[in-house]
Each structure stands twice: as C-alpha cells, then as structure tokens.
Length: 124
Image 1 (cartoon, rainbow, N blue to C red):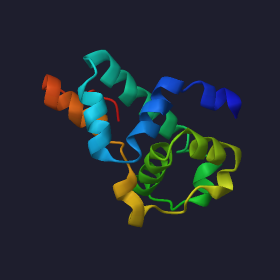
Image 2: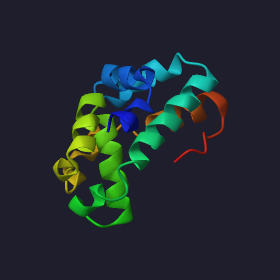
Image 3: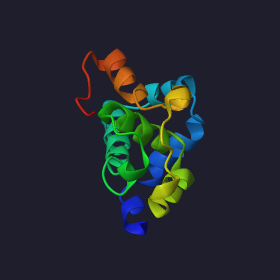
Image 4: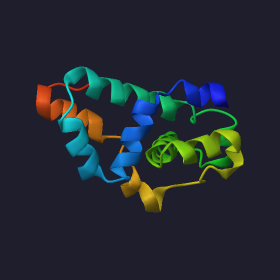
C-alpha cells in the first residue's frame, strides 16, 4: 500500500488538499501554474484514480464503467488520507457517488489547461 501511494507525489496531494474539493479553489491554484505543472497534476490525478478501477476495489462498487470512473475520481478528490484509507481497506470504497459527484475535482486541470493553452492534456 505504501508503495502505491508513494508513486503519487506530496506535491500533488498538497494541491488536492488545498483545494478542499472546491473546483474554483483548484482552478485558481492551477491557473497560476505553467503548462508542465498543470499537465503533471492531471497526469498524477489520473494515475491515482486508475489504481482504484480494478480489483479488489470494483468488487465493492457499482459495475458501470462511468460509475467506477466517478467513484475513483471522487476518492482522489478527497485527498491523500482518504485515498490511503481506501487503498488499505478496499471494502470502504463508496458503492456509488452519484449524490456526491459535485465533490469531484477530476475535470478541473484539463479545463484550465484548455483555457490557457487552447488544447487538452489528452490524459483521461
């Protein structure tokens, strides 16, 4: 578990925690960054989320592909401590986040990247 969470830098988790699941806060933080750092943030977000889209995690979630993606993005959006808890205890992953999807910040980095540079990161 420590190895898996260690692949995602504290730089990334500090930004997630600072945003406090608020899209506007994250947008402000990322807007101040250069192209490479926005790209890096998006890449790390997706890397962390993808980890939760396979067994054993999907044994405890709804089965739709979109639902699993939403759940994994939501978990990452909650920050490092919660993410580490889910890695350690897959059975604690939410079954669904349909009613909490507004707490996910998964799309913000790509939107900021597009707004600033006229292109997407291409990382989803």
